[in-house]
Length: 304
Ligand code: 13P
Ligand code: SF4
Image 1 (cartoon, rainbow, N blue to C red):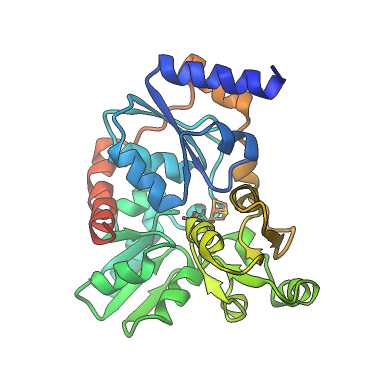
Image 2 (image 1 turned 60 degrees about the vertical axis):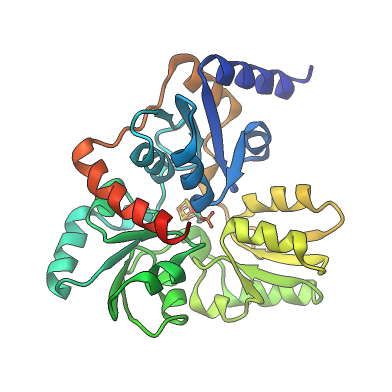
């Protein structure tokens, strides 16, 4: 047995012994995706966390994702094998900042991207993901809305609705790094390729996109599209499942710079350690969980 297969076998044994499920985000390293029970985008992973009957959820992703699992499944133990795996965009807004903004804007609904802390979700009317932001905004009975924390997702949504969207000045540094020049270079090198971009990219980059999707949206599109070449405008981790699921097609990163260091922190050894010692528990206190759940559940109901 190769060392990796040994580690995979150990993880599968521990998952069984702990009655645990392993969820992994689409950006996780290949060896983590290969051992997971389910890989997905933020929306799919939230749904799975809400529906599981496992006693333990091992979350391979970043902190806000594990928090969302804890919000939805308070009776389960949620483990994040590296509790220091954060999200730089989620850190761009605090509950205090948001309270002040709400005071200054008056009582308009707040749509908060799931890439945010539980404290910020708790102050929000409803959450959204990159897969359902337009649908969530359209579901609200209000003409003016504040979207936090991602200015790029907010502007992408604003272009698809008649509502007035106020936005927070947050962004994902990994996606913000992709420039128009990078995209032009990739298109020149692969003139037949379809350019797929994530809504966290800058507006000038999205203007060049043939298709705009969440990470799982890209996976679904690549599978069903008759096209055979794709330029991928999101974190480079997505290249692995794209290529694995479509061996006859070709995928090129829009830029090699699109790496989220936090998404690369968890190794197989960390997963083993976390399961062996039940280390890295993420638990949202009830006073925050209850209002945060309202916002997350409302999103799940809208996009059911
Ligand atoms: P998705 O929900 O599209 O998977 O995106 C999550 C994320 O963190 C993007 O940077
Ligand atoms: Fe956060 Fe960006 Fe990393 Fe996604 S890619 S987890 S938004 S820093």
